[in-house]
Length: 122
Image 1 (cartoon, rainbow, N blue to C red):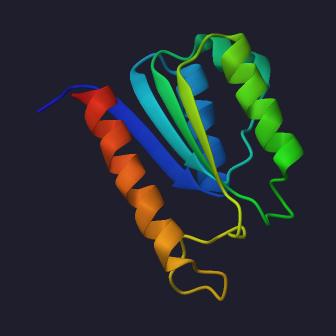
Image 2: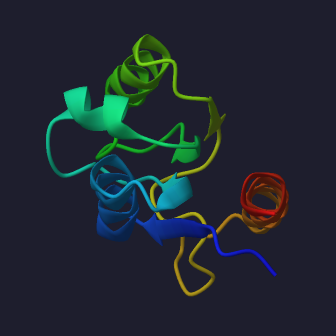
């Protein structure tokens, strides 16, 4: 068992997951799903550990321009990261009660999240 902390969330929760990682050095990995971070992206330089960002290519709320801003900020601060954009998915694709649910993308992103946490929190 590890004493390292990882965080994830969806939509607003994804933004809050990244905000927590930017503001708490006890967090060693975060995996925001299509979330807009609260706060200043300059604070990514405070991140200790890696980030796995999961986004949707058809998302009209969290656009590719925004995803690029997040990745550029992470890269500029030398934060280990992997940003995945599911091209044919829309905001909320992980929600199996939604009309935009994408079973294959949800399963793939879940597998990636589990592997990411296993490698960053063990």
